[in-house]
Image 1 (cartoon, rainbow, N blue to C red):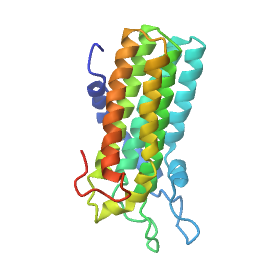
Image 2: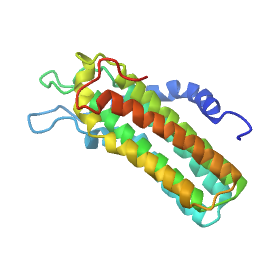
Image 3: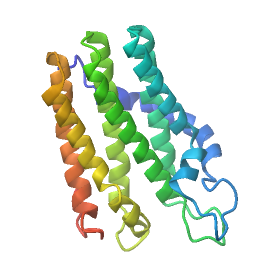
Image 4: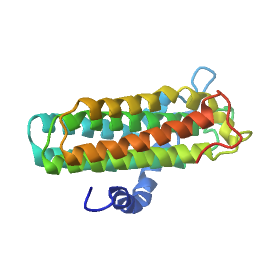
Length: 240
């Protein structure tokens, strides 16, 4: 077991996200990157481009992987802290766009759905990327940092999902249905990735405990999203 609750610890750090988000939103509020046209509507690609924290989180994970493999433990820990911070900011920016009107008055496409999809894809990369690194180290400090990162990102992923699932199915939530239905395989993949890691990695007690907790969270997330979007239409009473 961890010496303290990592999710609670990370959420307390996110109290500072609100301040940083004020700066972030100046970059992402116009998620369409300029006026939309008939041939240029907001997409996950443009949402990613408009949210620099996505790129910075990806870069931080790449640094963490390289440093872990090079046995640069202090640098790896610092990079994993950046993964948590940048992923938190990326998710907060996406949440801030849920319910926002189209940036172009002539467009019917709100910025929220592509922003949310881009953030959820980021979360998936951070989750699966963190899981794979449990096979690369048994060092207590790095295992702890990996557990902290995995726990934090899964928590933030669920915050985004809960906000979208809670939207009225016949109202704002309808804008998200198709995109969310297309992501169902992502959550099945997370369960499979963690299950495979538990079955095949040479893990110590801490690594086993961390991945066991992560698997329970992944299964609950998959069940929640399947209940809400598995039929291709919003459930009237989705799981929370």
